[in-house]
Image (tube, rainbow, N blue to C red; front, top):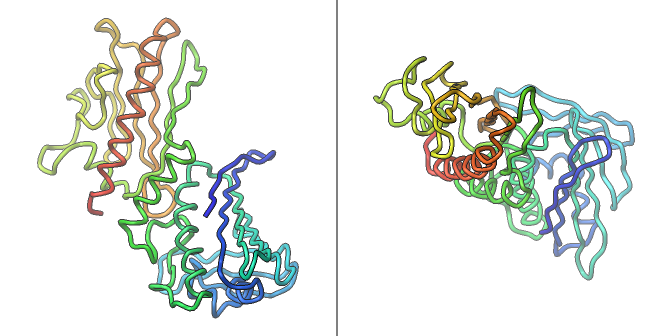
Length: 306
């Protein structure tokens, strides 16, 4: 499978997955477009008006997830099936290749930092589709609330590891340096594979050690040796924590950790650090240190419960 992530002219992201399937396009087309067969690999139950402009409903029986709608935008059997899903666009293309076919999925969306969740979800779904049409029943329906969910036929542990491989492959672990008032700002945004409460506990330490408090020391999970911390300035468990970092023993800027609800079942981490123009050396050291620190956190979360 060839998987790529690119940017579109409109500022959206396009995820492209390609896989060869050992069946002719006509057989794969049925699994792509017939709701009864889609239910065995697609991440939602689909109700479909099979015509350009036709309505699509994506429903999740038994799950606490709102139904969503879409519209068929292309329908060219057995070559192209495209539709919207909420604000996202999906285009499935089949082309003959030997005695089988090549399947290409292009998913266009706005949330670039959710790309690893989408990729790992679609990777699992497309694998289940291929298994289905090649004559072997998938291990179970995808049955997740959206293609970014970190659960499915591969199992939660496998999906989490797959997610992290996509984070690295797509360059989503890198931080950026932004211009800020009176200096600079580092910013990292990363989708994680565990919920907010689990991430917060991983950052604050084992249960029983107590929650961080304003004026108290910054827990080790929220700091790195390259960025000397002052005391906790603000804290709102389990979502936010901030503190001033020290340069020459004096406050030089603010470090802020924020956890929001991301794609799939995991939290979205947003980490920022501000600093003055003259602290360029410290800025570069912090950029590298936070990148490593967040990678270690993500690796730790692969084995965390929750």
